[in-house]
Image (cartoon, rainbow, N blue to C red; front, side, top):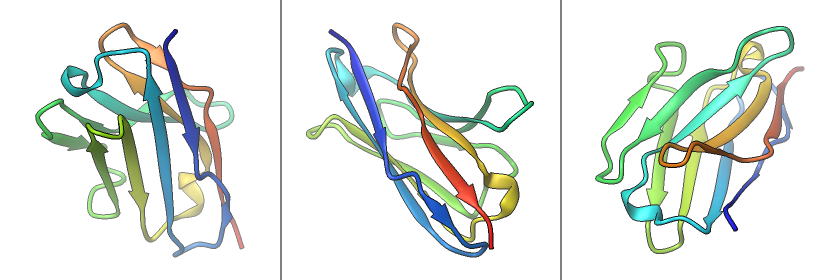
Length: 113
């Protein structure tokens, strides 16, 4: 059974930081490219950051320099460190496994004063 379980979402003030985690089971994690997506109300889901099995990363222009994606192949987990958060970062954040196209249930991030 494949499971992707996100955690770490919260309400944070502008300029604050959060670290999202995604625990993965049921797939061969080390070869799987992983990604973090987000979906704000009324908007399409968009890619925030991706990381290959070898550790290569890519980011949406809107988060470059503020967000960092990483992975731990031993723990089978992927992380998203988010710094200098802005109100426009408010969304539900989803973890995604490319091989098999699996999604987590999402975690809410709200940036507001």
